[in-house]
Length: 170
Image (cartoon, rainbow, N blue to C red; front, top):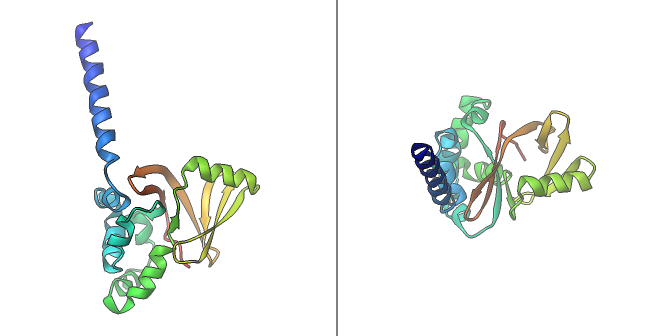
């Protein structure tokens, strides 16, 4: 019995410590700490957005994974990362960021109020639509393309990250 109590206490302490440590990271640090977002972090650095996204915020970041970036033609992605295309890359990346902290609960409440649809203004000033259907919650970009939100509420000190499965375009 003592072993069981010790094991439970150790696991609880570990989870509490791990959770407390995660809370001390901003949205950039969280992305940088995950191999799944290495392409996103490379793009954020190339666009010169690190300092802006480390600011107080709060921000809601719809973060595409490496697999999401892999859906973009490799030559196109390579071109976007070049210094001469910094403004276009910045426009794409800021299309994935909303000013303010929108948790999954907030998004669901807005979708309920909007009867399954809500339009948000991105950090770049463009509009993006959030849609709910029987298969989940999706972002619909300005070109009519969809990206599914696959994980929600990765909390940082200056906002929240929701993981998406495709890069959305302004």
